[in-house]
Length: 265
Image 1 (cartoon, rainbow, N blue to C red):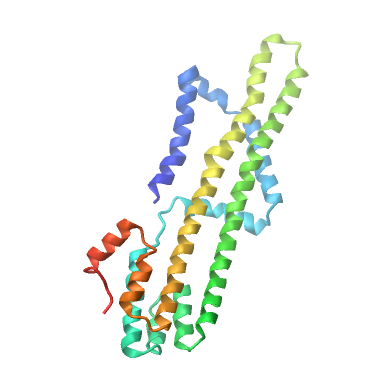
Image 2: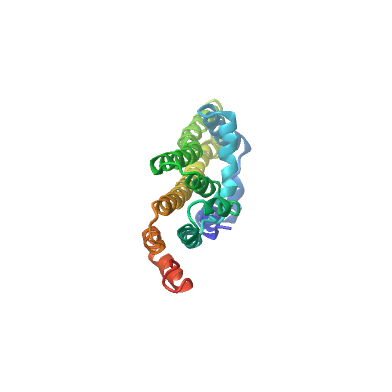
């Protein structure tokens, strides 16, 4: 589980509740719960967002909420070590040996690249095919990101719609002056809900999805560079140093410590 994301989302509601309790006391918290406001703001903004997306796309985007709270499983050090080992295999046994090695590879992109290399596909075509795969992944991820950005933009607007509805209802019932204050408070709650949807939920999720997408694209980019380096017959140590450039300094130090400064032969 990604504790940072969970802490951020969970901490957001804690901060909101603390702000409410500090200003008006714990007894005021129930006054911020209004079912009609929830229906107007959350229901309206979500339906409007569905209207700018396809139904399957919207459902897929909502499923990524579970992905956001999971710790990314991208092991850059493990990937570099794997590619260096494959480079050593190709150097000793030839590129055809990669076909057998590919049978034990789980990642579909890396497996496809190795099989294309073993089949003698031209390097330019290998790069084009693999980059097309990455572009397709990027496009799918951006649709999910767009969904939450759209929802974030709709939230405050529907909050204002709810507030206007509440104000109209309040003005239609001005015969009782004592009810004006409570009715005004209820009318403004939808604006609060709209801002919370955008800034507490949707924008953070969209930014986290962007971060995860960038990390995955970098990870897959390392695969492509490694495959092409193997195909070009480069020394495994050269391949290793080239791929280590994609690591953070801490990842590089950990990699060198685990592999005795290098895995190439």
